Length: 116
Length: 111
Image (cartoon, rainbow over all chains, first blue to last red; front, side):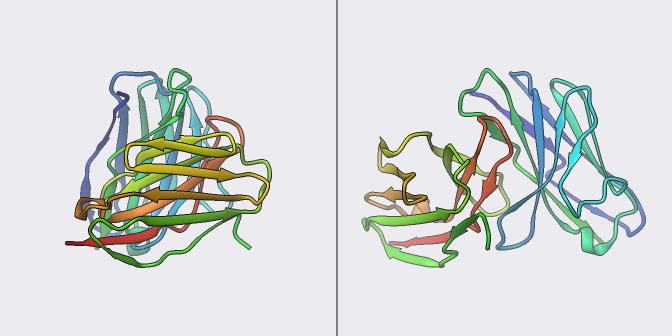
């Protein structure tokens, strides 16, 4: 079945530095990638939607300059958290959509970011 | 009012019990309904996907959709300790469009 590989699975960084999270679709082409953020014991909150080759669409309240999303190819999308602060500590999850999968959505395994 | 409401629980049941999980929604544009299971610190995995009112069964899982009442359910029969996880309902308007999730229900099945 469709697999999305997300790396790293966890990362600790210092406040003020940037962190890049990658999501790769291993055996299919992801026409759309969704990026979510999840706080402990809370649901997934959509941050942005990206389509290959075009700029991401951010949800209201999400800082586009802070959370940079690149979807340069049909198999790779990245989320860069710039100038990270402790309040950015969270669980980040990507989800890929392909027209080949009628069920639509394949999720990555998530990245736990801790900013110290 | 949230577009999707889901009782966060927690829900604790004995092994072998039938579990009922529910979500209500307010947006009549939602046409595709999903149930995901999420283990701690993992990404969600799809359990059930439906797009029409009625029941859909897959093994121990049954998904039920009532569009007229804007209500969806997931039933788990013969629950197992390995079913202990957070269960999330999700729905979308166009197929492949952005998902709106419920808050998630924390389920514990004890031996």
